[in-house]
Amino acid sequence: MKTGIFLSVREKATRLPGKVLLALGDASVTEGLVRRLKQSKRAGMVAVATSDDPRDEVLCRIACAEGIKCFRGHPDDKLVRYRDAARHYGLEFVVIVDGDDPFVSVSHIDRIIDHGTRHDCDFVVFGGLPLGATGFGVSLRALEKVCGDKSETNTEVWGHLMTRDPALRCMELMETDPDFRRPDVRMTLDYPEDYEFFRTVTDGLAAIGLDTSFENVMRWLELNPEAIEINRGVAARYEAHIAKSRQAS
Image 1 (tube, rainbow, N blue to C red):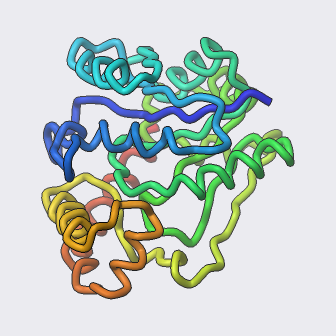
Image 2 (image 1 turned 60 degrees about the vertical axis):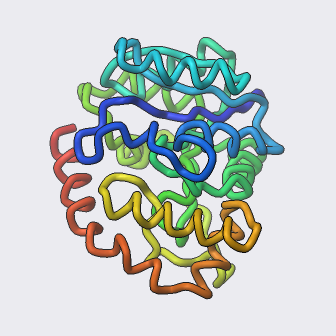
């Protein structure tokens, strides 16, 4: 089965403008994510999946500089964009990683790919992890079906479109390692407080000569729990935004 990872990213943020181009360590958020995803041992390819909006040209330039493909598709409908990208590259199963998740765990992405391909799954998620720690595995078959059936064009939030379809094989894996089973930790970049969190952790790890692998991040947070408080207060705002996006779809 041909597999891949799509880094889903656009340059249109309103809550934290320009967030995917912000500096984090020695690279921008998007550059760091691309380099991180290229470490996958199970994905056949990594590509940036962005829109055909002129503002997103900068993301294609980053992809080219980092030696990966860039697919430009529908400006708003994420699922159509992913479907068209999977068709274009001939992929049967992909993991979608959001461009605002700088500390995403590559090892968990690989576990999603392993499970999805071995068990012929249509949609695979990982529970118990920090928000932003992993991606969403989806089959081309599921993308074709949902895109053909749905009436929504706003697919900013789309997981429920998979799980509500009884014809699709949806699976939730659950993290059992207590070092990683930390749903109380927020690791997604939407607000200035989130950026402060990511910079604090990145700088803290650099000070002791470590990179920002997911494993290093979680060990550092165990020793420096005060960092988790930096962006804890934005969770309610974020959840309200997700609920509003789901209602709109």
